[in-house]
Length: 145
Image 1 (cartoon, helix red, strand yellow):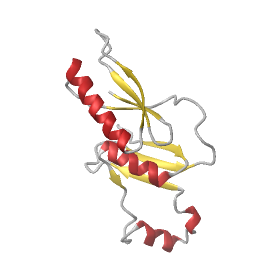
Image 2 (cartoon, rainbow, N blue to C red):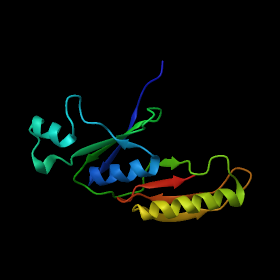
Image 3 (cartoon, rainbow, N blue to C red):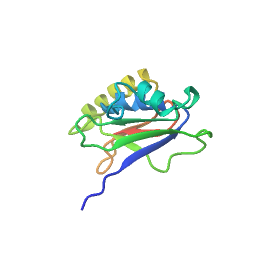
Image 4 (cartoon, rainbow, N blue to C red):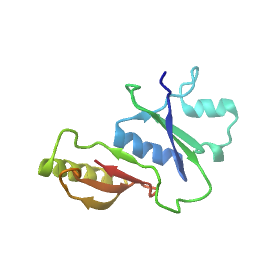
């Protein structure tokens, strides 16, 4: 038996952070509930006041193979290093200089979307193929791997 799961991010701006991660991963915003043309129409029908309309957001893999990402607003900001993080596989099948060039190109693209670049770890054979530590717009660490 398989068990489905989603990844949940505590954050300050669910709409902005979900838009960032949708771009990073090629995901899309989850559709509104059946019977509604838009999230705005659904939230109106549910009686959600305007100040609560950015309390949550979700993005999904268009092919429905990868986990759903859920973003929920919390009052406190990030205070410490993540204990769990995403590894974004930006250079599958590449090694050495080719791998690091691909990771650098993806790092540049993500900085343009609002990410912050962290440390670069060059290849260290036999086990370390190299990666770049990044931070999303709210400071959550992730790796380009």
